[in-house]
Amino acid sequence: MNIAWFIFVTIVIVLLQIYIYGKWGLARVQYKRSFSKQVAFVGEQIEMVDEISNRKLLPVPWLRLESKISAHLQFQRNSENNHEMNADGEFHRTLFSLMPYQKVRRRQTLTCTKRGHYRFETVSLTTGDVFGVGDIFQSVPAKAEITVYPTLVSMDSIPLPAHSWLGDLIVRRWIMEDPFLTAGVRDYASGDPLNTIHWKATARTNRLQVNKKDFSADHHLMIYLNFNQTEDMWRPIIDEELMERAISYAASIAQYALTNGISTGFGCNGYFDESNKKSIRIEPENGKQQLNYLLETMAKLKIGTSTYFDFFLKEEVERNMEGMDILIITEMVTEKMHEMIKQLEDGGNSVEILELEPEKLRQAN
Image (tube, rainbow, N blue to C red; front, side):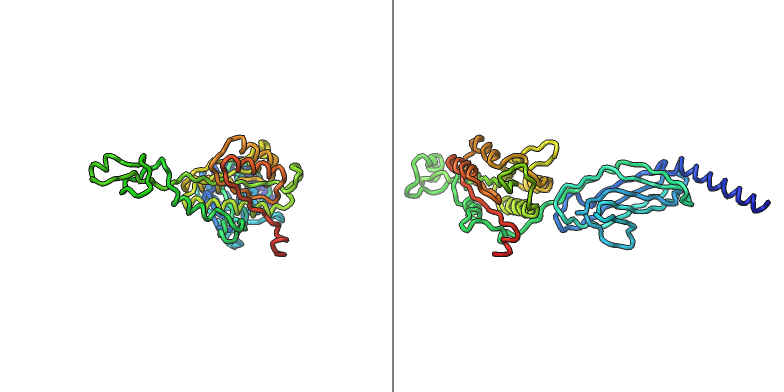
């Protein structure tokens, strides 16, 4: 009887705790995910912080957290971090144990291996009884995101045309006087036009004075990126690595130009959203905020085309741009592109082409 009674009591206890944990195991369990940084560059390490709390008297003997993680955010192999990754590196598991009213914060180091915008919406929480006989799960919101900027490379490693004006553009910014900007007065010099004479300053100093013009800051650089690799727009991108390199070039040139005070914009026939494939166009502006905006835009670009690059350039022609320095990064130049480039130049713009070479051709050269 004693053995039968012991078995009976054991079964009752097991069933009771199965019921208790099935009903209240995940009650008042709160979860939050965050990253140590909102933005990072390729190759940079960041921390993913999982914070989970048990706001009740009932302890949670085990709680498994499961979520999808991009293979391009690679975990450091560390025995302190209990996580598992499946074959394609997109499924993350970690195990917690929570006492009553306990909060646990776990930090795990990730390496950003590819540019992109990574968003996390939900995680799955699973718990159960002490013996692991029964379990329950619940999907909870865990909104977090991180933007990984493209790799920045040195200007020396970018295959700009041999006689590129990009370097000269930095110089021109400081040597070209703007007739609409005045920086004070100076003594008259032979050859100065009479309409620049400052009569009040002349009367005050008893010497002929003229308006001193400030240097122009009105040069604008527009970087265009062509995602077409064949004349068939609907054909998928053949060489994704080449386009990643092109994005890296565009980001590096934008960073170089903006650092040197050149208003810089960006346009391409790529897109952000599969459901709404619209070309990208950002007007030239100056400052650090513009650089962050351009880098974020390039980070979010999908590898695909929204329209023919010919049509994209035609839209630029129809906008009647003038006085713009344009750099086109492309793998191919069609006859139609040549026509559009000629029209842009006729409109008072200067255009250069940075032709991309596939990796095999680069290595051969």
